[in-house]
Length: 411
Image (cartoon, rainbow, N blue to C red; front, side, top):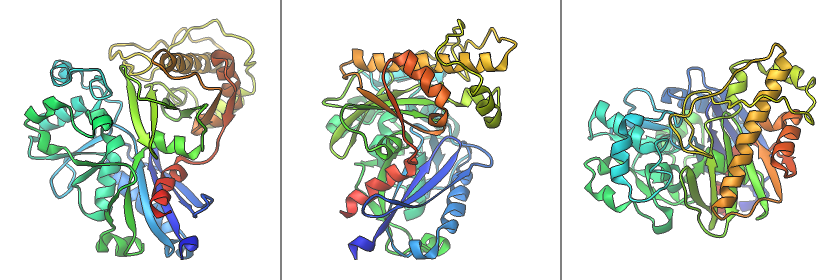
């Protein structure tokens, strides 16, 4: 019966994988996560973490699963043979292939997520230079979806925006027709469309129902947005390894570093910085961050003006592959330094919201925050001070958000 049916959401993030099972009322019945053992570049890690998590699902829940959707890091690109066999490591979304900036400019006639140096085209060109143009190129979520159905023909639209896919007219840019490597790209289908049933071999291996439908999902940040159940006046910030800000808008925005997705018929616009919570772990472990946070007075300013990028290069709120981090001066006090890092990250987020506003989005009345960094109340207060907008914390995992796409197909 429909009321007994359950759906599975799989969220492949920067540092690991999380799954969630929800019922028809969007109640979470099961969730679990696993960190990659080798890193985001290793596709074998994606599969191994997924296998381990699925094995943990109680049999009573597994047998009621009817559909599954997958979210992945937008822009993480893998070269593989036509049978899906990976060729080397994936190129993560944060790898900017600046050696192809001239080639990228020749391909695009207007600014979009694909025309940015941080888009997927530079990574595609590097992989083609390595392996030739008889390969296929698949983003993380599309490749894992293909692994489940044993068919790598398809790609979900949102996961291919950074490759240049234009949702507004459902096509690749006109100049793509002249590319020798156009055949390396997937056949694009909208989020929410059936990709196929799980292949019999995978169903047996994972002990999943043989009629489980795999539904085209979305990006990991979009999954986070859906998990917050926002209204039109809300803005959403995902504080994971990177800072991602999103807002539903009446019409798509246009600008460097801006991505426009369509979810359930509505435009969702936003941008992603290369800066985020990952920089904090370069200096402190999680337990020490929690201890130091208690020593910070969020109402005071440090007077330091840090730009806490983990590596050179930024994509949003400014698109500058040569932008260098500013991580000094480092004060003797660890709590003061953490305070300054929090401030620097909050300023990036504030500039992001201002950038969206300049491009035509209404400033949010409230910001809903999701992700690992959302749990830090000190950081939340510093962000409210810098941005000037009330912030609400949401603890629902993004895997539940992508599961709602699988559920929508069912209802």
